[in-house]
Length: 131
Image (cartoon, rainbow, N blue to C red; front, top):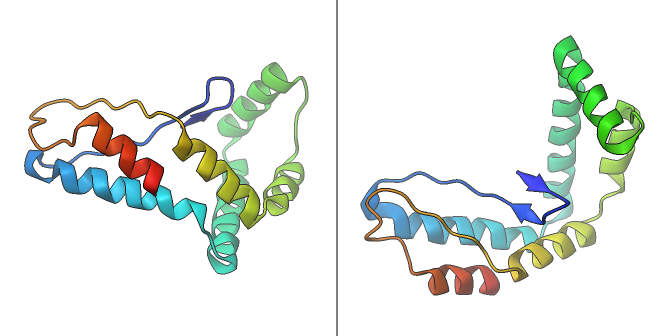
């Protein structure tokens, strides 16, 4: 989940205790991959996001909740066409810049359960910075 007012971006993972290190490495690699996105991948992501947005219009309760949230947060209602236009306006460079900014900030890491193979905080931070 991403909150623009606090700068938080969350990633959640669950693994067997002995696979926690591999999971952390896979998450860092995946996040690092956001810094270089090709045209085809970007087009697919945009199509999927717009498709999800438009499918949600079929659910009246989701639509009304969305309208209320937008009015409370922005003081206006953005139509689905407005959001599709905004999605289409995002470039590969925009996404790359946002990913680099996100990866340059200090992460917050929480682990629960058997954490013997969870990498040390400094290793996770280094993996994200080098991604």
